[in-house]
Image (cartoon, rainbow, N blue to C red; front, side, top):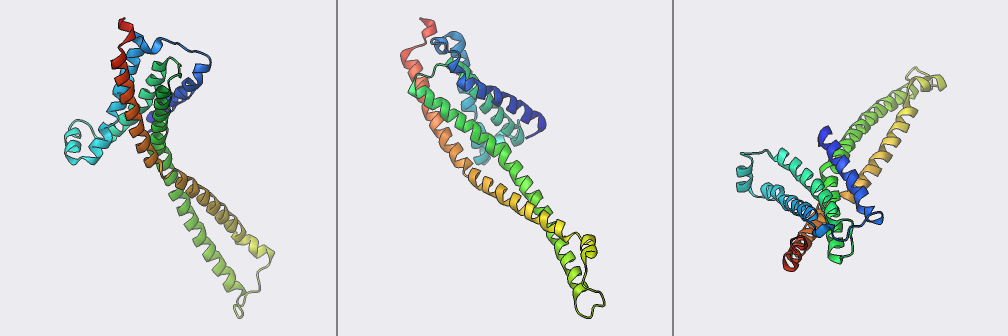
Length: 234
């Protein structure tokens, strides 16, 4: 995720998080069925359905070759992220902050889970993996330096080496204590980061399950709207 993409998604996600609890301060009973509310809901539904383009293209070679003639997979992934975040934003606006329907509440919750798990997989896990690789490289470097330093101290203190046992001044010249501290800190950081990564590793399962639930609930919601009619036409 590039800097501009991260900034845009972060800004919309922040507004989305503020909109979710906004029903405490503001509720519109008829907004969702009004012309404006219907338009927002329609756009949100279209964006949510468009999220299927990326996983279908990723898993279907024929569809991928067709789509990549027009747009790269990287750009399609960026659209996938934008469509999910903006779709959720418009869907929350569509509700009019009225969460009195069990179906609507379940749909909003599943939609937010899809967005959050999607961002975890798109941004947090790759960044965590990159930081983990960097820390492991630094740890390997420190361990190599520690081994060389320890070997040097062992040679100096070996019988017949001609060098006396190094005293405090010699130990200060060889920063073995600093190396030990650095290794311990990095091992602790790597262990913590690996623990966090293991916690978030099942993100794809949660993402797929939440998406299936979201589309099922969205279908029920759209079918209900069609069945009961559009109130703004009455």
